Image (cartoon, rainbow, N blue to C red; front, side, top):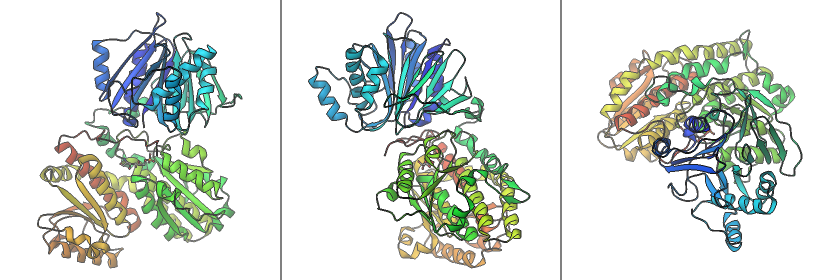
Length: 616
Ligand code: M6R
């Protein structure tokens, strides 16, 4: 939550900062601001409540003065409502120091009282201003930004990435990281800071993640890093694997529309290089050792939101193929339930951003209690993979829309690859079954392409249903998490009350919701390969139709049994049952996006949300 950018160099600092914020706006979009140490030696700043465009308009009307050093921030409010005054940067030391922050400073009220007692005033309601005033206070004592900053950060608790600059030390930005992300970008005669690489990928592909409890100082030609105790630290540089154009809209009406069409590539790129002679091998898992994989007693998947639904889908494959029991737990629930884990437990975390605080804390908890932890992550250099024993990166490319789409199918792909790797090592599938399932996985991208051709039919359906107050989703087996995902997409994008249910649960309560005209999406399993549950789902459809439901079935091509009972049928290509989720979810993604469009809503930046939830 919140996007941060810092720049020291010779380009237009305003342009670099605004472009960096634009690429990170998905991290928070309730206010934005920039500050620059202008060429006249004073700090020039602007900040505005609302989306980034409000700041851009403000800058056009009242330009800030240019200079070689600047910081910028796009906010998701925690302390204090979104307003001009609560927007970052916050100034201190008589306007000579500017500071921005991502996270929550939990002991802010104690620090605020201390600064008030020392004679300082506050203009905002934010915890961030407390940090600014504290650094400014210590600057007066030390006359050195690095020293003041180092003394300030050890006083703060909670989660923070802080960037500060002082007009008495132009050409320098000092930043610190504690439980919140911070990445350095190395340029030629210029250097960058960002919450993620999107902040600077238009300028350099050379990056490094700043570690936990480290302080980094950048000038135009140097980057120095220490830990909070002052010891020098070397960063591991990596090459950013995608171009700035990958995070551009590229002519699409929204990032979400673009990202839905990238579903096939997300799967194909995640598979690439991991299937050899028909067998899945994930070199990254060598870290765990085959003996550990053979002796695993239990897997716990930890994740939030859409990632947790990917985990639920993956659990079916891991149990079926690798014969390991799997629990899927929401990260925030896992951590506080005193879970039973030991050295034979594998925790698999799933996170697109790799920065979800609840998931990070779940991983740390599991490791502290003796479990091994691997992550499935889409963001290079993010904190969760860095903290894990091994990582299976998904290669979905940057996902900018707040609603997760291509990352979801890439996460399922990562889990299926893990399951097939583990099944090979544990010898729980025959060679024929291993190669068959790998081939099914390789066939998924082309099948998703076929499903995408149903887009205009689904869009029409969404337009017809734009007034509907509630939508229900039903599924069984792997269709159940897809029902949950369909409901989540609709809630977050179209602000429509929607619920996903296991179809078998209907008669235990949810069927009371069915009334005349109630739209219900039903994910129908294959009649060829899941005859038993197919018959049960058809019975469920009849039960809800009898009570007036309007049924929209997502069913396999050629499924004649569903036709008499469904008002609408969206057809998906033939696939083995475990591979149906890849296909069934696509119309649901399109439906939610189109319904939000039809209601005139912003599909990329739904209200109250941010892409990366870096606070608990
Ligand atoms: O970055 P993560 O995958 O850890 O994010 C987890 C959830 O916050 C995320 O999937 C969220 O549910 C999406 N907005 C859903 O579209």
